[in-house]
Image (cartoon, rainbow, N blue to C red; front, top):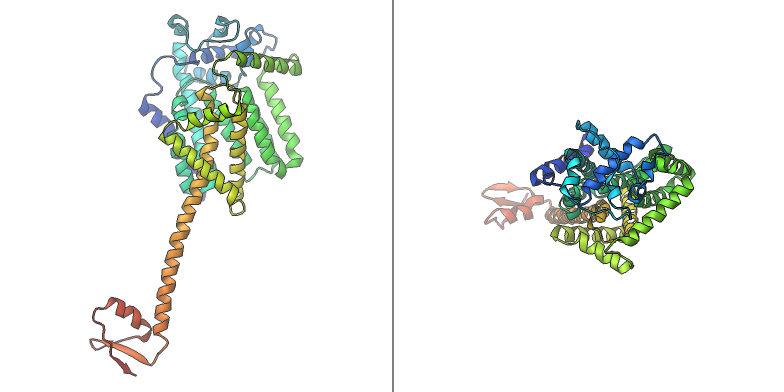
Length: 426
C-alpha cells in the first residue's frame, strides 16, 4: 500500500503530459525550428556499426551533435511503422555548419511521415521527466511540495514549448532529472547506483555535449557518500560514451578534441551570444520568469533555496541532497550558457521545480505546526480551567435541580445559559 501511495503522484504526472499535449494541440502543425534537421540526423543510425563511415565526419553539424537523440528518434520512427530517412542528412545544406532553422517545403516533404513519431518521442520524454520531478519533489518536500512542483512544471513556458517538439532538449532534461533521482536516492551509496549514474550521465552527454555538466554535478554530490565507488561511475560513463558514439572509435582523444573545437566554432557563429555572467543570469530570469507561472516558479525556487540554507539541519537527507544537486546544476548550467536560446532553459526547469517543492513543503509544515500549536494551546487552556474548578471537590453546582460535577463547573457555566450561582455543600 505504501509503495502504491509513493507511485501515485509520479503516475499522475506521467499521464497528465500526453493529456495536456492532446488538449492543447501542440503536436499538430507543420515543421517548427530545427525539427527537420533533427529528424534528418536519424539517418546516422545506418552508419552505427561502421566507425569509419564518412557519414560520421561529413558535415560539422553531424559530427558535433552527439547521436543518442538521433537513435531515440529513429527507434520511435521504426516503432510507429515508418522508415528511417536515408543518408545524407540536411547538414549538407550548410557546409559552414550554420544549419537553418527552417527549410523549404520541398526539402522537408521527405520527412513529413516521421514528424508525428519524433514529436511523440519528445512527449514521452517530457512525461517521464514529469514523473521523476514528482518523485523527487515528494521525497524532498512531501505531498504538498510534489503537487506544487507538478503544477509548476506542467504550466512552465519551456515545458509547453517543447513537450511536443521534435528536438533533443526533452531527452536532455529527462537524463538530467534521472541523474538527480539517482543522486538523491536512498541507494546512492551502492555500487549499482554509481554505475547507473555513469550510464545516465553518458546518455546525457551523448544527447548534448553540455549533458556532461549534469554528470559532474551528480558525481560531486554522490562522491562524499561513496568515494570508493567513484571509479565505477567514471568507468561506466566512459564505456557507454564510447559504445554509443562510433565517431570516437578511431582515436577517442583526438576525435573528442576535434568535436569540442567544432562546437566552439559553431557557437562563435551563432547570433545572440551570451558573453558575460550578468547577461546569462538576466536571460535565465527573463526566460523562466516571463509569465505568471514562471514568476511563481522563480519565487518558490528562491524560497526553497533559502529554506535549504537556513534550515539545513532540520531538513531530511533527501531534501538536502535534492536541494544541493538542484542549486549546483542550475548555477553550473547558467554559467555555461553560451547563447540566448529559450529552449536551452528547459534543462533548468526540473531542478527549479524540486527547489520549489522544498520551499512549499517547508511552508506547509509551518502552517501545520501553527495549527497544531493553536489546538494544543486551546486544549491546555480548557484543561487548566477545568482543573481550577476541580480544586474544591466538596462543592457542587445545581442547575434545574441536577447536580453538576465539580470539575465541570466552569465549563458548564460557559455553555449552559443562566447557570445557577448557588452552591451546596455535599
